[in-house]
Image (cartoon, rainbow, N blue to C red; front, side, top):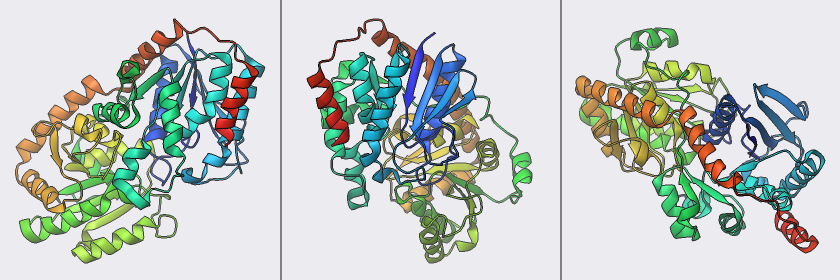
Length: 430
């Protein structure tokens, strides 16, 4: 048995995915923690307290505790504004380690701010630090430009974490290339370990049953887009493609968009929806787009099962869990040829890859699948086999434990000088 600390400052495993700051990282942390515990380990997840009613420590799953860290006001704060509170987060971790030592064999930080907050405790006690960045400053700014609102210090912090962490987890080959080329990371300390899907939760389902359960039209060609409602996810691209699909290809399809900050979608709770409705009106398909709002995890398999094809065309995607979930439900996937989607979707075998921000290319692939049902079924079957072979969370956890093992077998707690402790704590608080 290993004792593992997962640090995820803004992405709690308890938060429902789909809102602005709740998505793939929440799913990653929740499922990794659960599977690590199921394989005989003890896991604590440290995440920021964003509600005064949250208990300090919550026994969440067998072998998994969630520890709510007081860092800043106990209310939701956009992750782009959380960096000033990471000093408090780091102080809490340091005091927690001091009061409970010996306690952890490894600290696995998720996102750059979690890594920053973990530095003082891991250095003082000689605990190996494992980093999954989930997104990188240099890549985000390349694709988002002025739409990226993280503070400029982020890049320097990421550079320092690349140097100091004992292990870096890349979620796909592109992630590894970015770490090496843009951050000078040592390839020898990088392991590629993808995200996954819950094999109990996502399974093939009878389409007619799923459509009846959701109240969908029985025979209309149906497209699903599922994820956070933020511009970089490219939902506007899918809506524009729907217009081209109707106008140029004669396919009267319907698009279901799942995600947002509330179960009942409105422009106040999810401002992005107002922009997307305007895009749909301009494309002449407002009548063919249904915004479904945020849905609980247990409902998502129904949505995947009900659709004919799953589409995701973000500008930038470090990994992308939703294509894997759709593949696990035996649905063909059309994805943007970016980031991790390029390594999960095999073009022509499990679906198709298209350029981001190219609605005409997307519409062409949708039109082909709409008129070649046997091809769509073949792609779905291939995707199911690929997902089951490569992307289960249990397999991800096994690979992660192997990565941890190589560190914990050789780790020895160093004696940290007062000067070193002061310098490292200053990095967190500056």
